[in-house]
Length: 237
Image 1 (cartoon, one colour):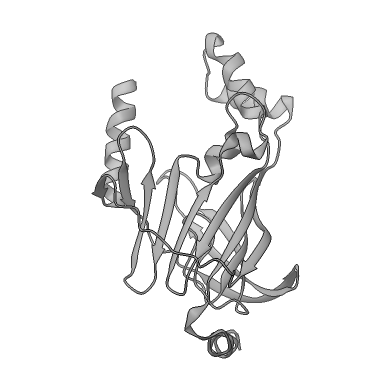
Image 2 (cartoon, rainbow, N blue to C red; image 1 turned 90 degrees about the horizontal axis):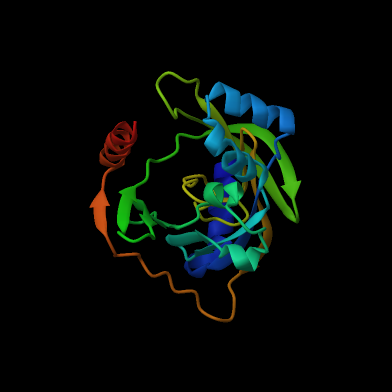
């Protein structure tokens, strides 16, 4: 049924669909007791506790923008100042994709994120393995269906359950950050204490949306990037 709806709406919208989606990333704020538990569990040194506590408890909502055409999309978090975040590091900003631009091209099967720091890197993104369920709900004016994916962050840790709500009414396979590959635009993502939800959708705006593929920096596979990070943190230890 979802597949038929996807094909029908794709025909209705033709091949020229484009749009802009504003997402709000929210993080469930930790209590003082939870922060203490994390600091103790990680054996955080006393000298760093004040800084880490401030970081963990600064969790202002962050707005991000997804722009898309029929086969390409570009996603990035807005500047923290424009989000009105408190002074200091906002942990939600990091979760929302701060300093990163996510590029998806479904026609060429080209998926990567560009790290926008002093030395640019373009890291390949892994495709999500979604399982579409029968569950549905409305988000705004759009009928959405539930999909689930499992993500293994570490070998010694259990998989993270990622829940997505997508609408076949907007027949593009995009979503926030590295979440894509469903038969319809993803309007909501949730996992652990994180929630990313569409707050505003603009379809086929008067001003033409042009997706510019990021081209700065060395291209790395996901595996190469993970290995680089492992070596970096080994060096720190």
